[in-house]
Length: 220
Image 1 (cartoon, helix red, strand yellow):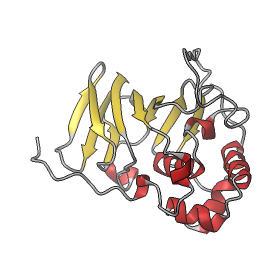
Image 2 (cartoon, helix red, strand yellow; image 1 turned 45 degrees about the vertical axis):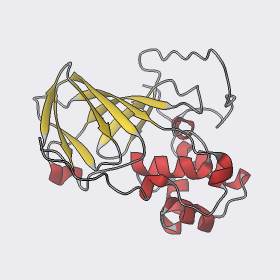
Image 3 (cartoon, one colour; image 1 turned 60 degrees about the horizontal axis):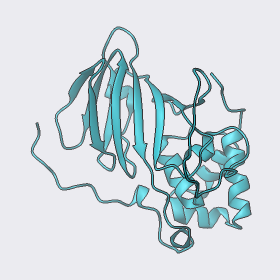
Image 4 (cartoon, helix red, strand yellow; image 1 turned 90 degrees about the horizontal axis):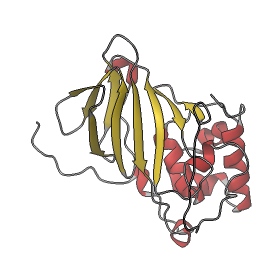
């Protein structure tokens, strides 16, 4: 697989932040992350979870895949008709946030409305996983190999095997663990509409860390 160079994501973040003349303090206010965490992120000293990557990319006004793609950030025009992107086997950009190893696909197109990735579910217990994650948008999950157990805040855990799928509201805290013989591999497609850039220049923080959880529904 095509792994990003060590520190490349951090360099992308620093370069984009400086291009916007955004201080670490302003970045902290926009993302809800501490200045210390952001500094360590730019120096590749901390793991970037999906939630953190979403918050940072929204603060910078770019698509998440522009953080993980190899090459220059934002080189693809934001408005293009008849776009097409092909990812050959092993050509995705790979990141590892501790809970999931994600191979992001079609990273040569920026400003996408969907973030597709082939994901290996690394842990087998919630204790190993830690706190459940949440982020903006919605998420489609299809089990490619193995078996997963999906945990969400408002529903009982559900087991999904090869060929089965689920669609969830990503603002609802959720976590996946592998329950089969081998670690499960899934196709994950998350929606991620880029906020209006003029809105990003306001003092309002992004929705990623501020969205209220949906009203509780009966467990199924």
